[in-house]
Length: 268
Length: 186
Image (cartoon, rainbow over all chains, first blue to last red; front, side, top):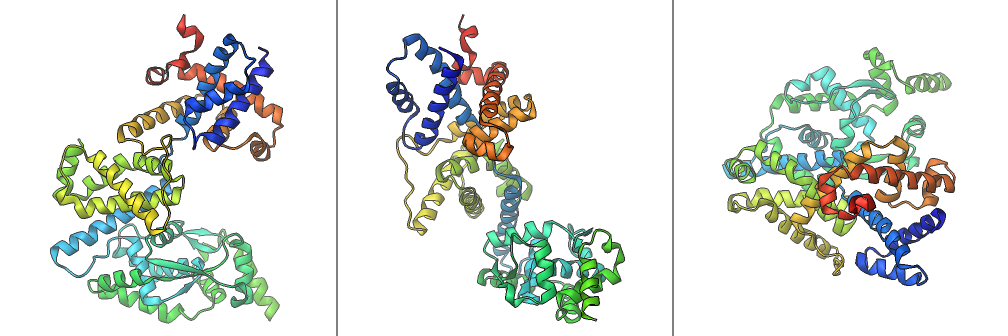
């Protein structure tokens, strides 16, 4: 058998295998394939059989799918949270200790309410760290680096995703029309694919927060309320500008600072 | 080892719980994924399985923890589908795999991955797209910008090279004697 002919037959078998493997056994698929080619000699069949067995071997061995790393972290977080809940219930205590970053996010939503866009959440978390040293209360608090929109820690994204998967928070897409002009510009620059979402606690999240808040250090609650009081009503533009001016080290990689200045100059 | 971790977990040792999770997560995930063919559902099922594990921890008997986790995952998956009023379609050719089968498949996967890493990057990419992702040559053409004949040529060479490498794995050779090829039979 010519090489090109052999390759074309292997290709035909692989297409058939991909199509039928959910419905038929491997043996059935092989028989079906050879039935299509009755003119093949026994020697040719034998030669091909080895190749198609190798194809099946590749499809089978490569199709094992271990858990992707991000997912694995999310599930681990969920297990730890459940374990903490069970521990507290067994001890007969009605509060849940604040031990994880994601719990802190729940607390933030509980005290701040709905938050429009991840950028805002990120900035509130940064201000809590920079102005209230919240990291003292929580090991493994976010570590911010300069990024396109100022202070940034990608773990905020993964933590929000974890909470969403657990049904503790939900996100609601916001129509672009409800955003201010500069917000639209910023989001157009950086959040094209995703769109803008409002994040808020679900009923389950509120229940969790209610249990947790009873045991929380009052200093933490005060810190969040102070940040809310000071920055909660700031439009996004003002919030970003304030951070850039107060913490100029975060202007370093900013693409948006120029946009803000340009926008403000345009207004003036 | 599993029993020792289980006993520690029962005494409240969180690190033992995480160790049990780390040890079993990939195999459980692959197991569920194989049935439902959806990563997000598989993640949810693995999470719920371990939540059940924590709730029922004091009652779990030592001896076959992995088997226990598999049974729970299967039941959780059934309930999950029931909630969504869907039936899991399982045929004779697609039954629930056994824990033992999944352990073997994990080892196969580890061995084949090690072999893949010995190949040039372009061969790795083409093989993964074609055999792992199940992309058609047309799709690979779009992704890589290579012509159809080049892709076939690369696939053929990559297969040949990979076959030579996997022959060095005693584990794979034992599991799949045909990879030895003609030379081996003589």
